[in-house]
Length: 318
Image (cartoon, rainbow, N blue to C red; front, side):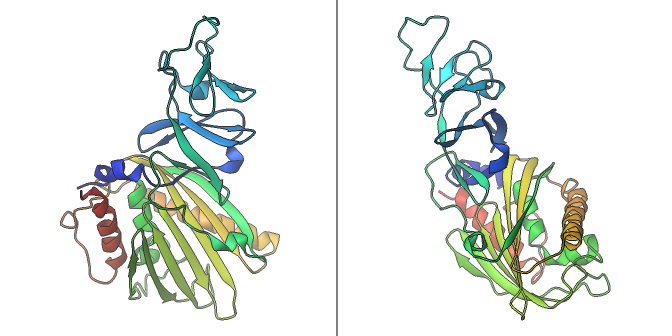
């Protein structure tokens, strides 16, 4: 079983597909689970339609918005927010065929992101409580598109053992590559754990990392210090195809950084992303194997990855 084998089930989950700031009146083309979608903003909020005019297969994202409709660039067919064709300019006095419609998908804005569900939602959008708490600043990082699968990228984000090798000396030290043991708590669509991390150049004070890993492609992480200072991250991915994904990162802090410090931290986050990209785009196979016998796992360092693969594989069991 490979990652793509559970995609039919993943249609019933919410997926972040864009930052809200990037979705305007001009239609935005995106791809989710190998389906092309068009995003655009109307007075009532963001709309998501399948990116395909039913008439001659032209992407609706090539069109434009007039009033409360999206206009196909090829023959000017008008579609409303529900995907119904409401005007065919070439035959304005004829009834519109019942088949003249395209699928419309659930679409909401939350946490500064646009989320789409292609089916009937089976789980809520993951929470990011720091966005509702006073005293937190927020930095938006990305989007970062990579030629790697979303599930591979998820595993990389929670892989302690690579810190000392890929991110030395930012997040780890090759002289001390040992990893902390974790106790995993499994919930229906969620995996929780925490551990105490040692000081490093990016986080010079001892801190506890607290993770919530949401199925399929979202991670909420808190780095909690004894003095009450917290840096939280909300990391989520769009699975475009089995070989391509885009990540979005929100970084929230309840302590101040001066402009120079903030710029330095942002540069470090971007450097870490580029370091990961080199590895992720060269892993084989591109898709994450959900069969645990397909790759070798080490007790301790790979505990989180093993449980994540089990959680994803369950979606393929009918």
